[in-house]
Amino acid sequence: MRITSPKREARYSQLLKAALRVFARDGIDGASVADIAEAAGVAKGSVYLYFDSKEALAGDLVRHLFTYTDEGEMRLSEDPQPIERLLRFCDEQEARVNALGDDSTIVLHMFGHIGKSKNDLLGRGIRQIIAESRFKVRVLLENARSRGQLPADTDSQRAAASILASTYGTIHQQMTMKAVNPEGGLSVREAVFLVLRGLGYER
Image (cartoon, rainbow, N blue to C red; front, side, top):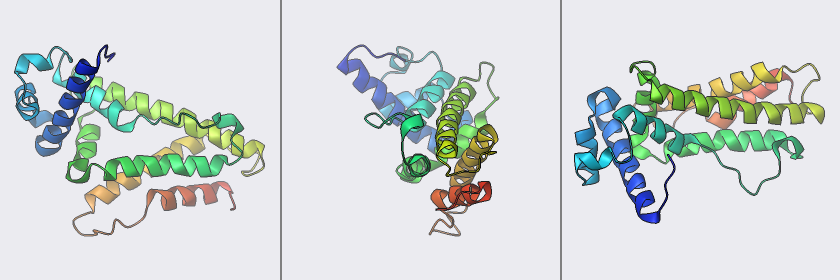
């Protein structure tokens, strides 16, 4: 959503933060626009000034949580250390979820909600993030391959899909097992590095 003034941007952010808390507490199915408005301290009608529906709000929230910006860094295809940049990208996904603290369960709710609504705006948001992430990882892998850091026959498309599956799968496992394994077990960097080793990468 395009925000045109600082005041509207502040309210937009306020609604996203309230939605995060409510979705994490009640799940996306169990939450209502009225609940989100109450958590934000605004009238229910105010939510509809920014979002057409609860699903539209959830779609914006997932993009807000997981859109990765690397402004100031060199182009992906020109970075002399593509593998390290790839690992930093995966680290950032893990750090963003961990920074949510007790609200990190929102991630499980989001993935579990895909396809449950007619317009599936949340699903569209998640698919957009995954497509953008896969492109970023694929370009970095192709960069690494061109520098001889990966075998010449590395399938960058499939490798990128495997790395993202490992990244998000590890994050989900950490959240699911947090109660019985507070230390978190395998880190995303460790999991992704195992995939890279399987592709033939040697540090």
